[in-house]
Length: 276
Image 1 (cartoon, rainbow, N blue to C red):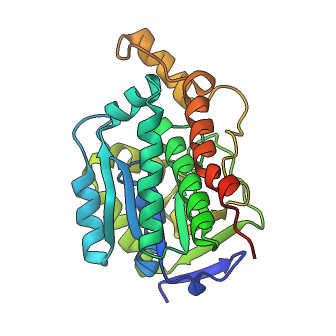
Image 2: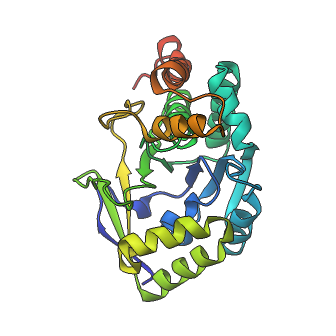
């Protein structure tokens, strides 16, 4: 068997219509074993052009042979446009994206969503998590059902990052063939060559055999790490180097958008509460 569940808070085989929501193309490599087995509908917020050319085509080439279906939310904006929308507080745009994803979840009868975690590493990842929480909340309210909500981490393999595992985690173990396929796919993803080499050098190949999905019991949770989020630290360095003009700040820029998205998603709960 290519994929076996080591432990999980619920049975994943009970889900018929899973979805994957990512901030950037390439995130699928982190959970490629689960994707290959469960074949989710895929949503991607940006085109992944943060450090150069867009890489959406590489994700498309990776997912198409696996039988994955993509959606209208697939590389909506460039990374630069997303960061500009955060800095200039284009809140109506974010709310429109929530509505677009919500409608798709309902139209496609999605019953499970896996999305990026809130890690304070990149604004696109954290916005993606908020958008996913909002769309799930709104869809659950409108449909009167419960879409299961899971997150996967993208940076816990980095040196110095603390891993957090508990009873909310579902751990999937890849067999040798599935792990080999995952590593081959990663090496073919040329736009992420440096990140992949760093990950393998830091943790080794065997580390990526286990894929962890964390059940989200409290959507819209705030960024939980102490100190500044990593994107603020990196932004300050880039401004000092003259590469950036502005720094995206958690309190100043991210929180107003996160609060607006949450309020938008929960508004229908107050107007049309679901009754049993």
